[in-house]
Structures are given as C-alpha cells and as structure tokens.
Length: 382
Ligand code: V47
Ligand code: SF4
Image (cartoon, rainbow, N blue to C red):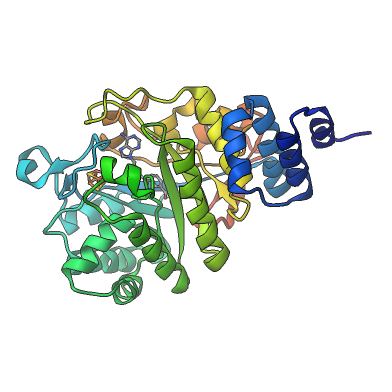
C-alpha cells in the first residue's frame, strides 16, 4: 500500500512541485528556487501535507509547550520601528513604564513555589538600563531561584548594551552568561534584507549584527531562537533570504532551537495602512518554513500574536510548539491588534487546546527536555 507522501508525489502534475515532494519524501534539502516555487504555486493542501510529513517524522504527534512568564523591563525605546505598537520614544517616556530591579524581582517572587521553568525577559531599549543594570538583574534572579532558566534580551537590546559599554560582542555575551543568562529569545530579527529593514526598522541592529550576536551566543554554548516578522511589505524573496541566512548559520553552529514566524499585526502603529495576511497565507508560510528549514528542530506558533484557534490549526502545518503559559500582565500584544487581551493560558487550557486537535501535549523546558507528557492526563490545575 502506498503512503500518503507517495500518493502526493504520484498525483502531482507540476514537475517542479513533484521534485520538491520527492525531496521531502527522501529527506533532502530544497533550494531557494524551489522555496520560491512553493510560495508561488504550492496550494495550502500541498504544502500542508509535506510539512505535516516532516513534522510527524521529527516529532510524531508531540506538541510542546512550556510553563513560563514574561517580564518586560520597559516599553521606552530609543528606536522607532514602524511596525511597533508598543514602544514609547524616550522623548515621550511619560507614557511608558520602567521597572526597577526590585520590581522585576518581585514579579519573579510571585512565582515562588509554582512549577514554572522559564522567565522570558524582553523589552524596549532604554538608554539608562545598561550592562551593569541587567547584570545585577540576572544575578539577583539567579540567586533567588537558581533552577529558573533565564531566556533574555533580543539581539537589538544586546547590541545597544554592548555598544554603550564599549564591549565586543564576545566579551559582552560572556559577561552576561557569567551573570546568569542562559538563552536568547528570537526577537529583533524582523526581515534581514536591507531593502525592507531600512524601511521598517532603519535604526536598530542590522541583519548581519543580529546574526553575529546569535553566532557568538552559540559559540559560548548557549541556545537561541529566531523569528521572522512577515505579512507586511516584504516579498517572497525577502522571506527566503531571511530563512537562508538562518539555515546557513544553523549549519555552522546548530545553536537554534526554534523558528518562530511572527504575523504582522497592524493596530496602533505607523503601518496601520498595511493589510494583515490572511489565515491561508499564515498557514502556507508555516508549512513552507518547516519544509525549507530542514536543520531547525522546532517550529513555534506564538499564540498571543496568532490567536488560539489559528495556533491550533497551525499544528497541521508543520508547527510542533505553541510556546507557553506566558502570564503577561502588560499590553504588548493586544496593543498590536492581537485578539488576546490578556495573554495568559493555564496549563489545563494549553493541554486541552492541543488535545482538541488530536495531538499529544508535552511540557518541555527551554531546551526541549521533557518535563511531563500529558497524553493520558485528567488535569487538575497546579
Ligand atoms: O522583534 C513587534 C514583534 C518581537 C509587532 O524567542 C510584532 O521564544 C507582530 O521575538 N506585529 C518580539 N509582531 C517578540 C519575540 C518573541 C516573542 C515570544 C517568544 C519568543 C521566543 C520571541 O515582536 C519583535 C517584533 O518582531 N512585533 N510589533 C507587530 N505589530
Ligand atoms: Fe524598540 Fe523593539 Fe519596538 Fe523596535 S520593535 S521600537 S526595537 S521595542
């Protein structure tokens, strides 16, 4: 009897698409030109079936999530990305918030005794929050709760911090690692290609700088994630350029855990005139990313930006991770137009969401070690 992928190979009439289907069946890498063909001609069902084949080969039905919380030290930012709904320029900082180290530590303490494995710390780029400030924060969190994995600071925040402290990327990263930093989140990547970056994020670290920071972290034995902000003014070629740079770096370092496509949301920013992508385009993008990024172990749908039901749907389009409980009391996502007014899910809600689409919920830590398999579980919330 033929398998689903063999049937797909046999039933595809387009020669180019047939070659891609054969490559996926044989576990071979697709080229940039083939990726472009997928964007231009691949139907939702075609790319969906291929991506699901890869997803199930890598992870079966397993769908990962973690128990984490977010801290946003400030929404004051020296940069002025056009898509950002969240930051307040330093000149208008009266609208913004700035947390002291003690306030952030108090947030950490609210999770004392709770089975949380990760804190995610990302915010705007405040000129007064420097290396010394963040080293102290890391040290104090580490001291208070040594078992909590600290995933913190986008390459944008790091580049600014190191530049102000007149440190090389290598020295700066080593100092933060020594203070307690364990992983980097994937933010700030946006679209690397200068044609687009110069329009939407002109004044912050460029694509090369972003990649160099992640490479340095990987060389120090740290892991990181990578994002791509899509569905605005970029073309397919820009998405492919972005993913090729990530795939090349991953070949070198193997330090990326997860690729996280971030759907552009158009509320309350300088790009509100740009329409948001359709759900079909979103799912096609997830699927094509799963096919192209053959050396990325995981593909994450970030549910606060995508919405819960669409995150569920994405589990049939290559996605095997839906981030975490998050527990975020600020407004970063709802400000950008997400349906999620309060981005928090209980473990029970996350597990139910995954089970509803017949996948297997598995709690992981930041490095994808299994914390608990919820397959047979009748949940009583901890
Ligand atoms: O870099 C800002 C994005 C990112 C908008 O690594 C927007 O686990 C859509 O990177 N529409 C920061 N997106 C968040 C981020 C992240 C989040 C969760 C987990 C991880 C991880 C990383 O948010 C920014 C930018 O690309 N963003 N504004 C907007 N209007
Ligand atoms: Fe600042 Fe980040 Fe917003 Fe850009 S996306 S303005 S760097 S907070």
